[in-house]
Length: 231
Length: 287
Image 1 (cartoon, rainbow over the protein chains, first blue to last red):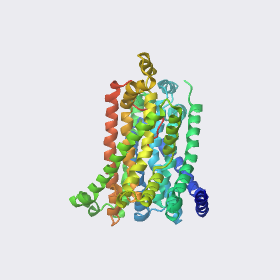
Image 2 (cartoon, chains in turn green, red):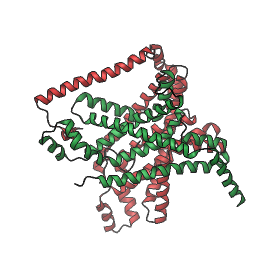
Image 3 (tube, each protein chain N blue to C red):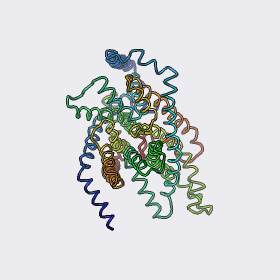
Image 4 (cartoon, helix red, strand yellow):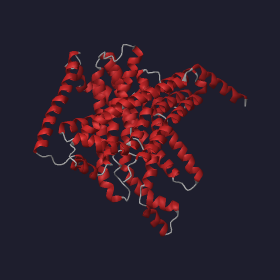
């Protein structure tokens, strides 16, 4: 019993020394901004891929195929080693904030490809009659997309978009490559300094992600049922 | 693609055709302009110099950097594919078990490992194995990579197995029951074989994820392709080294995805399940 309380005690001191919640908060911030950017970029890409203009379609397809098949780690390393260190492309004069912004760029360009595919699969759920009706009342491509197709497509895309968001949340740990002070990096530091409570430390971080991810899953499932277009 | 095109627009008339042509020309100019802008920027920085790129065409670089890196990537990915398929089958069947306790335990394990970032597990196993010293110190990163990839992707595959069985028409099981099979017998000899065939394309897409995620190993010092190229590039041609690494990954993953797509067409006659996953997965994210 004594060893158990002792273990718990040293686990508590480890928790006091390091700001676990703060690190997870960085992950949440990365998730929020990357989700926003990749949603915008992904929607534009989806529009390009379903447009009647060949060059737009081609560019959208090329983007998705390139970024979907490249490991996120390579993109992140590229952002840091090439964009920041070699090409000196700074998004902010603040040293640390610059890394944070580039991490968001890396996460966004990668996940935009998946957002695009999610929205495209949402477009697939829109029945043909809807587009035909839009054309029948004289709407051309962009108005038809904006007023008729996309609002329904987004509703159909909630579930796959939710999956992408969950993946994005977990993938924010890769920002540790960009030396952003987030959860995976802190866990490594904590285990290195407090190897005696390695199990408890891993359990804490794992649980942290479970607590963040499971509600996202529940909310998107609920939303996708609630928003589903009754047909 | 064909179906989608007809969803959003009719066969264009002469006026629309002219408009599409004009937009198309504009698009080509726009994209070529963007590409030219990037290339000019890189050229101004001296990144397009031939001597930075030609090393990747020499036998030396392939022999000592690229191929060993690729070998390690394939080694980790292959090991993780085998173990995660086994893990996925075990837990997928476990989630379909008649026993409620087994179902629950398998469910909790699968949901847990699907929610924890792979990188987190990788770092944890790397440091844990290093501390426990049950494997060769030099092999620690390899085992950490394989373990983490197995737990995550195995859980995803378990979900594939489960949704594959659920995706079968109800009549399959009813037919099994009708000829006097037990629930388990019909699962084993009627539903699972068809579910496995039906999930094969999704399974191969999951292999793409495994291959991509093996690059996370570079963070825990596993000398796979990305790490090998990073080390090679640290002497100067880092942009070039990373680009070559990315291109190699894209080619391999593209080939795998292509196989998955072909298979789903070939296999659809062999099962009553759906071989073509809804163009984006609804149950599992392949990111």
